Length: 170
Image 1: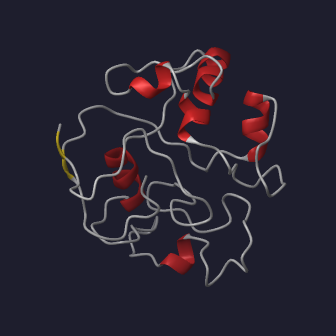
Image 2: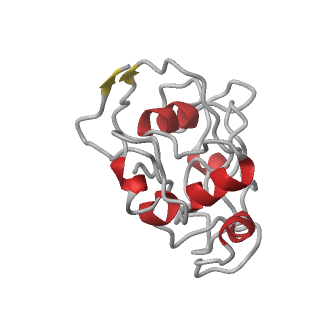
Image 3: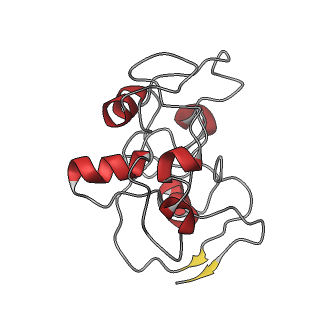
């Protein structure tokens, strides 16, 4: 996973298909509506869900076979979400996440909706501005793509695994 987009830019890759990314992190209420329970240590319907693993999201059987298989376990978050909606939701790849996070910028924090370069304080909750608390989704400024909370608050899971070598290809 990648906690933020700082460090070397890894976009030596071509994304060839459209994809969707949630405007907000998955909230505890959304997780509970899909899974029937809330695993989070901090309690609040509009707080992002935390204390979930890749296995919770995709499963340990079919869900662990990516990229060979796009399948997920029926009891996983994605399995239940797919069953409820009929849509093949999944995690973004690291390349999709990074592209979405940077929102048209090659800088560390991405662009704001007005095209200006953002700062971490404007876009994310972190040790210097969070009072050591988790915050409700959507309280910070969105990036130029209208996505909130791409920096800080909680870590984001990606479909593929982090590699310090980066990635390249199509």
